[in-house]
Image 1 (cartoon, rainbow, N blue to C red):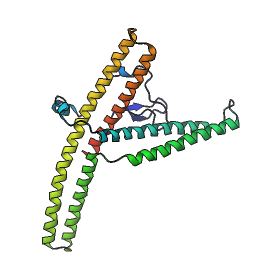
Image 2 (tube, rainbow, N blue to C red):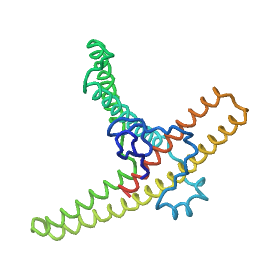
Image 3 (cartoon, rainbow, N blue to C red):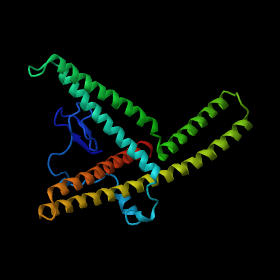
Image 4 (cartoon, rainbow, N blue to C red):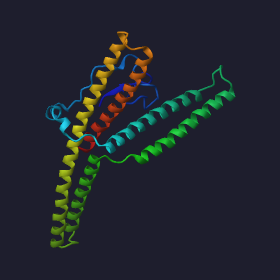
Length: 255
């Protein structure tokens, strides 16, 4: 997975995160972010060859899946903001500055702690809405059935059940296991297709940003309009990038 090295503490965080997960330092690029080298996904070359040409014919990313990916992006944003505020509190706790009074010092810390408490509540609310994606759910069901089969064999070996009972349940469980394997395969293919779609979406946004930059530099677009449009596209890019990261994690962990 792509990573960003924190300019503050030197530790690596996920590329999609806006703040260092260790010290809270901003990870935003200072120069023109869209001019970065295009990110290629290792291990997906074969997948691209087979899916990219006919991705349009595949199932589009359902709205509920996009919502779940948005929730995961929101959660990362909250974690980053919390980390940044916590880092600021820690710096204040290190000692008083001569430029600030005791009362101002206490009020500032109180304000920061209140913001952290608000973010904690917001994080709890978001976490309640996050549900397993279909691939994860299918993988968990497959593992549960495997465990059930193993337990059945143990019970049979201990002679606690008859051969007839064992065979009846074994056939039932194995039939369910075959069905869930098919379901798991289908869900994995869907996620792989969504990854291809999101890579195309990210590339399109990068091209739009570069075109926007060119219009600005040639004088066609005023600075105010350029910044406004760039910020909107940057948010789209960030959301798409985080969604990609989460789907790649999904395939690695549950595929």
